[in-house]
Structures are given as C-alpha cells and as structure tokens.
Length: 217
Image 1 (cartoon, rainbow, N blue to C red):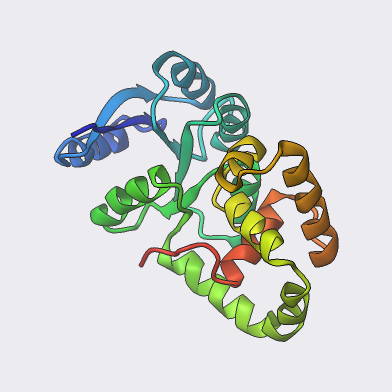
Image 2 (image 1 turned 180 degrees about the vertical axis):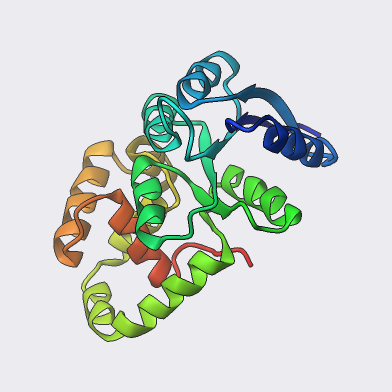
C-alpha cells in the first residue's frame, strides 16, 4: 500500500509529536518531516514533495496563511490542510483563498484529522463539522436568491465550478473534462460574472452551500 506522505508544520514540539504518533499508527499514512515555522514548511515542501502539508496557521515569522499561499502557488500537487484553534468563519475563508483544501480545528477528535488527510488526498474539500454547520445555516438564510443564480449556470459551468471548488487547477480541469485550458478560463469568468463572485474562496464558499463539495462529518 502506498502511504500518504505528510509534512507537519507547527511551532509546538509537543503538538508535532502527538500528531506524528497518531499518524504513524495509521496503515496508510507516514510523517516525512516536521517544520517549526512557515518558511521552513515551504522549504521542506520543495525538498520532500509530500502529499499533504498539515499546516498550523499561527506560527512565528512567515505564518501558516502565507506559507499556504506559497505552497499552493508553487507546488500545485501538494495539498494543504489547515489545523488551527480558530473557528472564526472569515478566517476560514482567508485560508481557502490562500489555497488550502481543508480546515480542521485543533479540538477535533483524532480520527477526524486522519479522515481529513485522506479526504484532501482524494481531491475533496474537508471542513470541521463546526464550520460546516455555519455554512449550512448561512446557505439556508440565502438559499432563495442563490437558487435563482445557480439555475443560470449551464451544465458545463456547474461541472467547472465543482472542480474549481475541489481545488483543481485550470490544467487539471481541462484534462478531466477534455477541453482546452482557454475554455476552462472562459467558463470560470462566466461563472464568476453570473454569480457575482470575485475569487476562489468565494467560489468554494458558494459550492459548499450548493452541496457541490462533499462535507465529512
């Protein structure tokens, strides 16, 4: 069995030790390195090419948010899973905008973290249940106007929106749908214009509300 290669990025030694012990008990996961700050996380990502970077957001120097943006920009194959004590929803969307594939709270059960790592490697977005509950409530408050907007998308635009929200690049979407990268860019522009969305984080937020991204409980 090919194991999921995980890089731990957290400035607390005891936290890293605890996570390492948890993950190395899993038959399909292994820790390939540990970073104590964001800059080290970026450098070790380049060196080790892990499948997943488990990223603490509150680190000295280059913080986890900036490190996430650098990693997702320069190493598109690598998934970043944010691990944080912050349950503020706006903070969550900043993380998504930086390119993270998921968001796990530090008070989560150990098995949730294991499940989240598996989910992002499979190309899914993972949200801690507390964040998911907020999004469901927000969707219910705004469902009617968004329903009308969503109906304005073509079937192909809905497919592209779903793949964007799952974290796929334009090139990956083009390959998955057997269309050109230019066509993907055109669809993306139309989607954002029709839905009045302005960046990837807003696209992901919208896709979650519409049930296009599978949420793990």
